[in-house]
Length: 232
Ligand SMILES: [Mg+2]
Image (tube, rainbow, N blue to C red; front, side):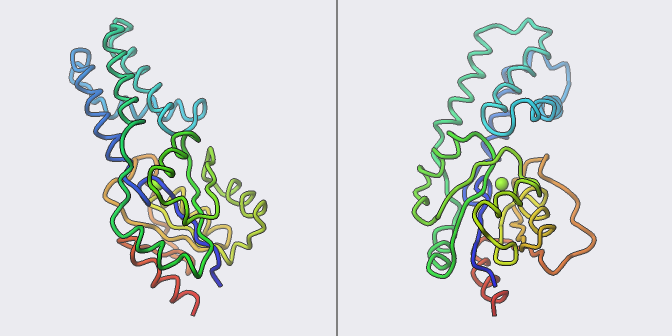
């Protein structure tokens, strides 16, 4: 019996990855003189992957990776004026309004009386808190946890801490790797929200063995129907 429903935040409740891609494009324009035909997307992604163990996920980590990429590409000749332009790109992302996806409010309205709703996200604490506040969705949720990694160990300790049985827990998110598979492995229900924009790092191959605890939906508005079916 599902009692708890957890939502991923970025690219599940609101737009996120699209801003990162737009910013990456602008970085490409700033470092264009140093590129020599190299692919900025590929180089930046490589730097980001190297930096995750040191800085974690989110905006600040992304910003440091952009600056590091620019310094490397320019052989340490990039000007402080150009670094400043990159800092402005980050600031623009911090100040960007939160765009809640269509159907999210209606879905939360339908679920709020029957289930305990929560948010589990990774990224920068301050940035995620700001986005939740700006989304005006806070009142729907019992709590939000900002974690540094979304793996089985993290979810396990989180469920323990809140005294939640995995069988009563469902999580929905756009990342099969972070929001779905770790929970399915713990005996909870995972729902994959198929999204046009998902960060490269979050993409993994669909598991061959589609366990009965793993579902996918094309739109968040399909969730109430799915949960009702699971509970009946
Ligand atoms: Mg996400």
